Length: 218
Image (cartoon, rainbow, N blue to C red; front, side, top):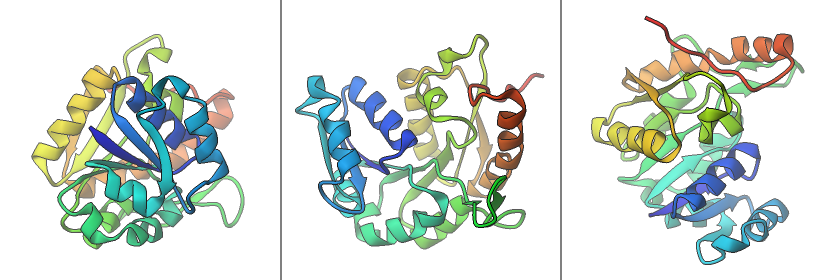
């Protein structure tokens, strides 16, 4: 499958590399074609030379049959707007971003919470895209390799389109290796997973490592 990955940070690189390993064609998108980090990512994956490429956000969005949003939360709506609604129409848009506000330093606060979420804002802005919120409650390496932790742990999905969530869940389980995937419900449930981030940041500071995650026990 052709997949567009938006963002050249740790999350975008981790997601893009894992998708290449799974046999997908991946275009890593950034603000400008020839972005230094995007070019370095392509060169870093020579074994996948025929499947790895880079371009602008718009080019990556148009390229992908599925699109991963891995840019900073505060930039997400602007980036997706630059791609255009027509390039996202009918596509599964996997949103991994978080609405973190670093304007007052650390720890960050949230740009939106309680009665709204970034996931919902994206879905409202692009009603013909199938937005699925997932993977936003952990560090990048765990997203694509949950086996880094000794015990099974949990990833959540939120979205309005049941078929899209089924497709994403299959990718999480069969591709990324997740055993525990919990469908929280419609996109409004992204409020809860986004509001986990202040707790996650506090835990990272306390534990002195990002290699941890949440596990639901019944």
